[in-house]
Length: 119
Image (cartoon, rainbow, N blue to C red; front, side):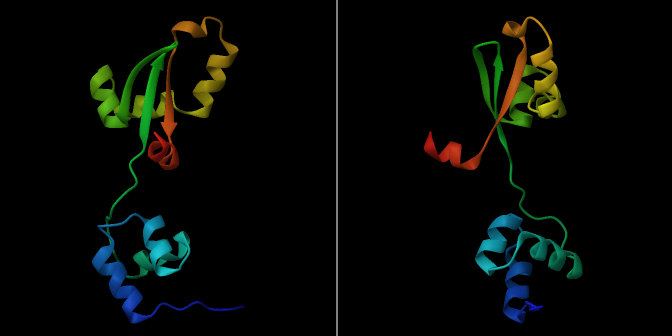
């Protein structure tokens, strides 16, 4: 089994740049896996960092309501951000499929990074 050790330069980069990049970006730059980056952050006692912020498109029936982060959508709709996450969950979508009258239901769709770049 090959052991992929971290150089001092890689550790220093992680310490210096953990607030500028999320774990996926750090892993890509360092040539490491995301789990390896997470593990090294724990070993080096690095707290915080940049998090990937998801965007959501919220619809009521066929009507588009808002596009933004969970916080932005929640503020616009006057609901808490966790509710936007619930509206985008698979379990909520399954419940809607079983229910009659989907035409007026509110639904959030999580927008992936590659979809945002294509718009």
